[in-house]
Length: 229
Image (cartoon, rainbow, N blue to C red; front, side, top):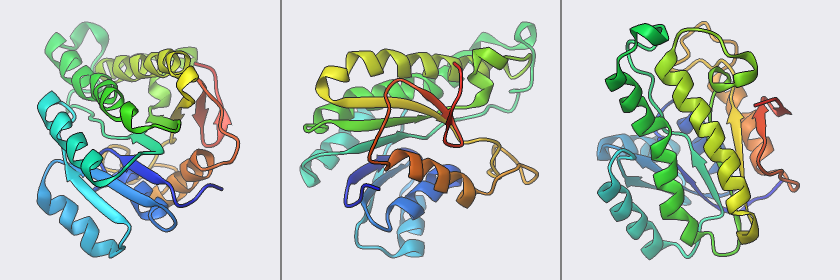
């Protein structure tokens, strides 16, 4: 497995993001984003690792992203791996398509789809020697097994999967590989306490895949196994 890499994780103060920060910072240099300073300080204090840093950033705000990446580029020469992890699930997520408001869909797209695209645009110039981008998606965005309900969330993740495929083609010549991962049903605020996997179990699988010597491009994975789009 790779180590001593410079890794940027969006949404690193809770859930899967926090699990990735904790796991990856054992042997790598990790920068993670939070919306509020106190959240970043809490993680830094809890883990107490010298190779850990945070940045205040709102992925819904272009100016916030620009300022955050500017700070990162002033402190670090390059980024090797990007995890687009930050995402939302709105309260009315369970609604059917004909019941879902356009406002809810646009709000979810703003964070779950456009957010990762904004981050990629900003961070790619720092991947000077190539790199890896891992988009944290969901099986709910998988067309092969699409069901009803959760319309806004499903659409946003299906679009994120499409973005993954597009970027994997466009960035190939820059030696940047892009993949999507569904972490499975995980015990987070979003997944609930009855989910199948703990955060530790889910992130261990993601880390093993992401740091492997051989890294694919333009694929969709769930718990380490490739799945159909």
